[in-house]
Image 1 (cartoon, helix red, strand yellow):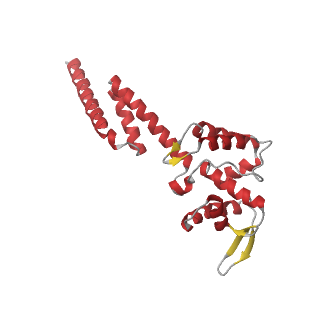
Image 2 (cartoon, one colour):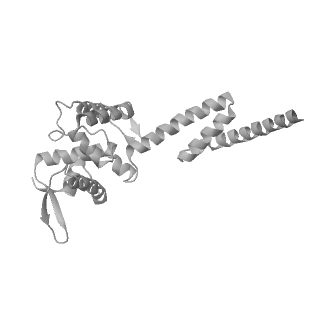
Image 3 (cartoon, one colour):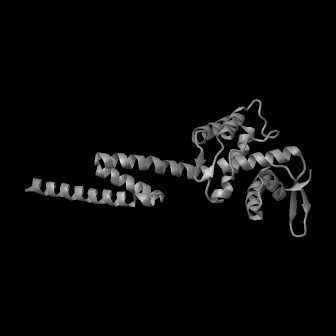
Length: 225
């Protein structure tokens, strides 16, 4: 085996667009620099070319890019390979956030493969990340679907916070707790995740909250007399 990293990435993840493989190549090179992936270098016309020359390197490249979909911090991914406690903790995080989901932020998840990935990552005594490929639960890698500046975990947590806040908003609205509802409107707006279908509800809540404040001010005025 003697393959350049971009070509190997295209083969591993069945990527057609050169721009997409370049995005993943830049991530892969960060693992070359931190020593997790070993390559052979040859001097090209303008710069050094990096080659994967054995099956272990191929497996590691695949696993680090897959794990990077969940954890963008290259140091953390490197620690998953060397620290059993970190590996188990990260497996638990994937289990709690992803296992019961069929889709995520528009990315289709294959549930059996998600379960298999968690089980493989948890099997620290029997599953060697340098020798065996983790199951891939993604039809499209999140790095390609979301873009390089939107980490999957961060986007998921923001989405979950939005959903939790929206459920709480509806509850406060039904209880006519206008102060709580107004606070939750602010939270949703600050997250930038308020759906258009909720605009009229938010405007209604703000109007009711304003009316409630004006009524309280009127009561206070009467008390002062």
